[in-house]
Length: 324
Ligand code: HMG
Ligand code: MG
View 1 (tube, rainbow, N blue to C red):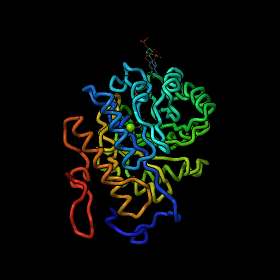
View 2: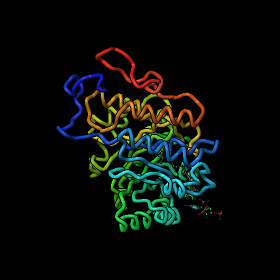
View 3: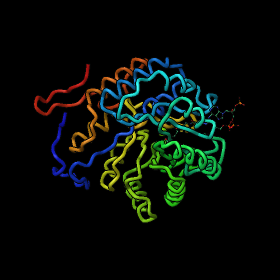
View 4: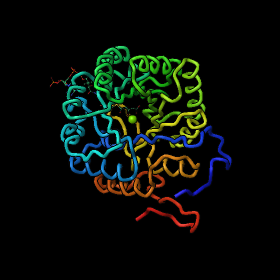
């Protein structure tokens, strides 16, 4: 459903005809990793299936991290075995070290994301090492994944602020992003782990990265919506030329090692915005809402997202759609 109109109505983002926005779904990984109550592997697999039904083509499925660090995702092998892989859908997994990569490889993964941060304090809390150490630890992981022909991504967490040390200098974010790019990852995702960023910072970061030589085509943004700025930040990213945004269906999410972080930007909120702006992305809002309702039932609580609560909107009738 397209509630608004074509790009020309007020929006000045530079899209060329046929250009698409990628929605990188993180619900099964980021969305569930912080949930304390165990979720059945079969429910996770069903969730991934509903996301693929909705048209999502990049679904970050799980993590091969230490099960002590993230007990909820200790079933990563079983999930990869269980989920029905659809042609044309990429299922990246989060990998912290060589051990994680070996597990992911044995489980049949074909795409992965490594992760570090712009702040040492967060890196220590999250992965027990400094940023420098984590980049060195990721070097053989990325090299091996590339040898295997996998698609690879590198996350820079705390790109807008750290829960332990506060402000993070954009120059530091640029430095870490460039070092990940030099490892050879296909894409660098900048994470607003605790949801403190605002649009001007998004524009500044993209500008600094462009000057430093990182092509905007290799950039993605990963916004947590803790303070309600995620959609505004997406618009700033679109204006700056970024074409990949992370989101979590149902608006779930949070990192166990980032106190105060709330859910990711909800996929349904992102889809509604992109539809209104007239951007092609290939995802059906009603399908996302069906997956969001499923996850709400599994988690036993109502949806936190705006569009999850209100539904989409049909301009022909003025009625809400996709709400049951
Ligand atoms: P460690 O304890 O410092 O390191 O963990 P270790 O190498 O000494 O290992 C300790 C134990 O973990 C050992 O077991 C290892 O075998 C085991 P033990 O001898 O105690 O029985 N181990 C593993 N087991 C399974 N798979 C592995 C693995 N590696 C070690 N791959 C480590 C270091 C990095 C492993 C740990 O701290 C960890 O797994 N951290 C992950 C934390 C995490 O997943 N956080 C959330 C994801 S990041 C995020 O959400 C942010 C993001 O969304 C972007 C944003 O929002 O900004 C991406
Ligand atoms: Mg995150």
